[in-house]
Image (cartoon, rainbow, N blue to C red; front, top):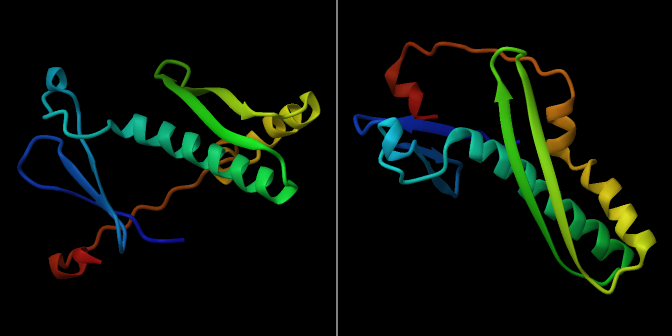
Length: 138
């Protein structure tokens, strides 16, 4: 798996997220003190699930030779700080001349994308402080 780096400087909340070949901007909206130059972190989390879901459906339909013209995933993410529970509501639109059986199978496959599986399983975290500012540009 690629290493993802997030970097914030003096501009309030504007964060540049990068891999070896891509850059995405995350931010907070104006009413939260940000510049509204990118998606919020929670939106990026929902976007990870949405994009992984439609990619999984595309791969599966292509492998089966099914006529999936397009797949659209709308993901709503909420987090309840009191119960400490997250909720992802995933709404799918499947376009193409698919049978009811194919549609049902694609809905099953939507719940099997790698991001969905990662989010539903227990998660562990490890945070390591790197003291040397030169190595923070990993």
